[in-house]
Length: 119
Image (tube, rainbow, N blue to C red; front, side, top):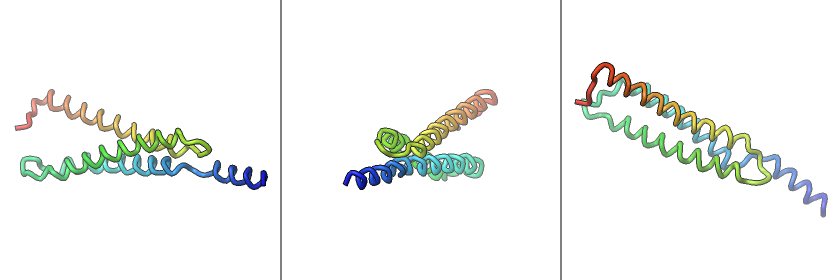
């Protein structure tokens, strides 16, 4: 009986956390969605009233980042599970936030330097 329980605990310990997998997947999707948002930024003209696509992508990206951070934190807290995927998911989620902030800062500085306005 004791050997069965030790074998069962070894099998459980070798598995990745479901929350870690969810964190990694949402981190990858958030990063790819942000890149898609940046690439579509040059093709969509907000003056024509079709910026809802960019807004929707940005909202979806924000939701994926929040899901990635929460599920990554839960994946790190779980006992007897591998934490690698949860850590990678958290790193990707935070990298996506940093990339977005850097891009926003660059666009803001560009607008200030060249005197662009939203009108």
